[in-house]
Image (cartoon, rainbow, N blue to C red; front, side, top):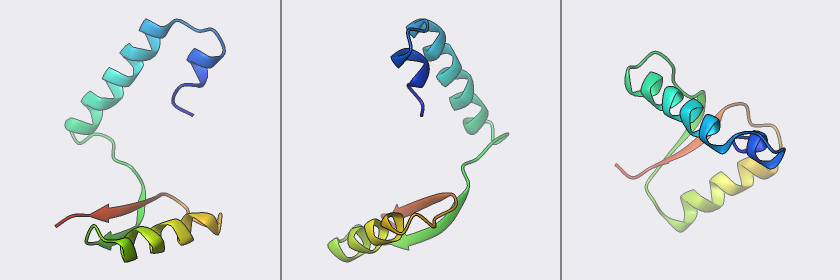
Length: 68
C-alpha cells in the first residue's frame, strides 16, 4: 500500500520524496506499471467488467479503462 509508511508513523515528507522519485522514473520511462487488461471506452459496461475482473482476485497487474 502506498501510504503504509505514513499509517505506521513514518515521516510524511520522506514518503512524498519517495513518490516524487517514482513519478520521475515513470515519466523517464525507466519503470512502468504491469498492465494485463485494457478495456476501451469509459462506459458503465467497461466499469462493470473491470470491477468483475478485480473481484475474482485472480488479476495480476492493473486493469486499465482507456478513454481513447
